[in-house]
Length: 121
Length: 242
Image 1 (cartoon, rainbow over the protein chains, first blue to last red):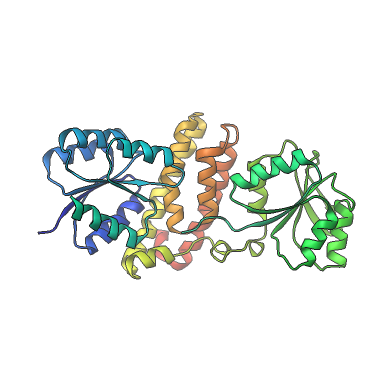
Image 2: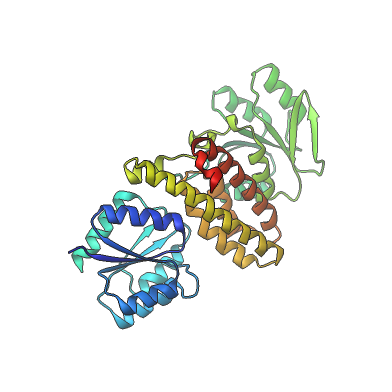
């Protein structure tokens, strides 16, 4: 059975690319375009991995991660960041993310990091 | 992925404060710069066959002043690199059939960006920068899937266009925090089309520009986006229907 990944990202080009690449890699991908929709999907569906942006409308990425850590601490989270966001990435690691990928991502790096994170967890 | 905009500057100034100002501005803009303390030292650099895209010369540089330096470059070295005079307040003047732009006091990153954008494209090095976009990233990502590429281009047009409309609203409302958030959001879209100039503009607006500088930079970004779409329409005629 395909592993389910929730992508929470509000840049449509990044969403399209993630969906394309992860689907090709054999995953079942669900997309939320803001943090509020991400929370809603997390409450009603089960996922093996969350890939989330940090600067999201309505509910920020950090709030989303805090929610996951409180309610589903075993669920791995990979953060999507842009360059120049070092401090934000450090904050995200402090609240328990498992890895980060810089946007726009390298296709091979995405595949490897997703596979590695899912294998560890 | 693109890292710098690859523009090589030759900066001539004997003034330490001026050199410091220019160092800070060019570093922030991700430009490659070589500093010379006088125009003779600069001539030696140019004779050594090192190529530059733009020369910035302090209005007080010596021993050859800007005019003499320009004439020497043209007549003796056959170098046609554009020259910008740094300092003073004159807007623009023509010497020896060569247009000099002026980087006025107080010099700023925004003014330098404006000058760089006006440079002839052929003078900008780095391959990708000679065009408004590249599909290499999308091709690599999708193993050259044409449907994916066309759809991504369509998404680029509609999504960035919409965000830029929102960006103009933030300018009208002086909501510069929101302006910075929007440029943060669209930066990866420009990066996916490997447009270094727009990536750099987004970075400047997002992290370095003062509130007073943001409206002018946003206007430059809008103009660059329009040019990208114009170019894309040649390769993707269906964009005219989007």
